[in-house]
Length: 223
Image (cartoon, rainbow, N blue to C red):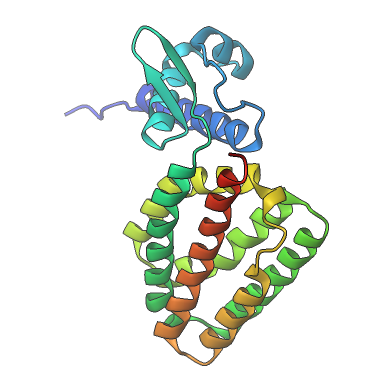
């Protein structure tokens, strides 16, 4: 039988993924602001892509809670919401804690050094009020345990949830000056180094719930 050609489908998938990443990053950075209308023609011109991958990317963004639509009325960037913090952080905390419980027994010395370096970078970024650097360092820190867990379902679930969580963190960064994450990270590292998987998992869970509570509180301060 002839060999099927999938070049067209592959190209379409790559364009859809490219559109998703660029739109997601623009939403996280605030380039596309909460409530901003998203029009296929304008996005296609901006990204230099056709409307089909744009529509597919927007549909995926809607599934992940970054975009909301009302048929025949609007497609727009989802507003920031305390409800997102209340719903999202407990789930992320549980997944990250599970990753820690699975990953701690698999950590190597180099992994611990990477976590320490990431936490130093995180502390420096907080001191400099550099939100991008702080988020990147925090991702590196927690990513070590997720990688060590080697569980694809945890990784997939976090990939879907984390853009909404990081968007909240970036938008509310100014309200998080008092966060204790640097010290919490140090405790997590110490427990990981001691091989105490369950206690490390609980410390990871507390770290994420603390951040979620601060973000939730920041919405209450506006009312």
